[in-house]
View 1 (cartoon, rainbow over the protein chains, first blue to last red):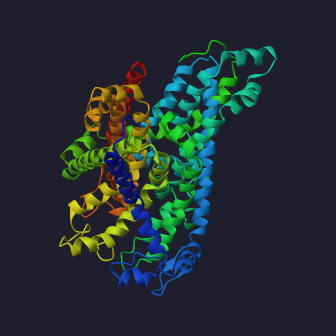
View 2 (cartoon, each protein chain N blue to C red):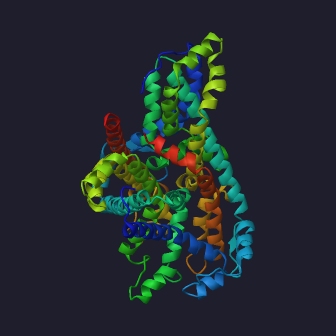
View 3 (cartoon, each protein chain N blue to C red):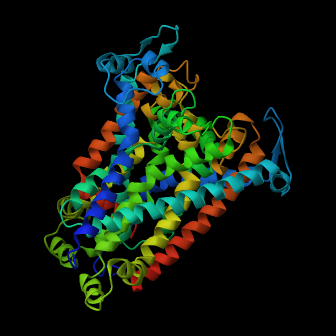
Length: 285
Length: 295
């Protein structure tokens, strides 16, 4: 702060509070809707802005599924949460593992084709699934991976961002450490495990947050390759629940599902905020 | 920073083993399908997928003549400009304010960053619910003010809806980068300007904003990529490309033509065009990053 201007400071706080409210409002509405009954939401327009008394029933209906009064079936969200969790963890850890290994190879070895390998990984940045939808679907289908965890995760595990971040970090590790390891007769993998990996903890934590969210929030890819209800991630499940139109939708269950779908990634961001912010800014360098 | 290590390990096989997993995935799930898209884009397949013939540039020619494709281009362009423009302005405003306050800056940051964690599809559903013509609370307020909101019938309303959801979802990302950029500006520069008698407004435009140019430019490219790629889920969840094709952005059209309309050649040709756009954007982004290192 350069000088003290009470009026300007008050204005700053006002803008920030408005910003926070704007950001929070949609989620507040979602939460309120999840505490009411489907009838209350559809019949009392505008809906009440205070929590209703149907919270437990809404979340129970969402988590375990069930029959509505109109006879339509609500699929249980609990298994979807499980699918999302397994997918997100596999993608995050898988990306970190293979990127650590690739970055180690590219930085600490000289081998023919090293530059080519580096460029091939780089080019994947420009080829996300979204721009090559059909042929990628075809490959996965030919390999018999539709409706499987392997199909949901493996095609998304390659990571240029993670490889670059680890490469950047390895380049800052002092050469003396390698020399010392070599004098002590440590093999490359020994050096990797005992020296490099412990040093990379912060980068790993940062990437974990970003990649976990990436994995949890996947939408298009599961939409393409999962037809089986038991392999539907929760983010995709929500969309399937609203496709019947306003009146036929059990909005309280949908909104409860939305809240449930937001909790794990939001928790990861909030609890690991320090690493998350660092990782986000670092990966883009 | 060094680009090369002076000290290395020696092994002729180990590096290959180390890069093998990543290479396998890259080749099977990235390069092969991308090559297939290129290949398919010059073929015409019959409806049953039993035979295909080489048609050269015909698929591209067909796209060029296709009004809905050109309309989709325009939709994507409008969507990008609105999301990047509104999103960057709002987040810059918030970042400047958060940079100004001494007390509570961390607190505000915590409360502003979590939409990053919300899935685009969920963001789409949240905003859809608030603006649903019959039951939405905001659409009710709008009607009370004499504005008849219906994004199911009005293309402009639908576009407004997805722009709001997309801006909301991306706000935290932009905010974090602007805040980091502002905090990396040396305090002495701002103080010197203050001593020279420049007020906060003047200081922002003559000192802080010019020094933020790299961040702003970087975020502009990232936001355009975001709109091209990641907003598919928002569009699919909130409007399904409708009404009509008024919010069918390019990626949505690739998906729709390939999976719903089964036009393989056309979808592949669109994929190739999207790849070209994305490659151009990435090159711009990285060329600039190299410049920033020297800067």
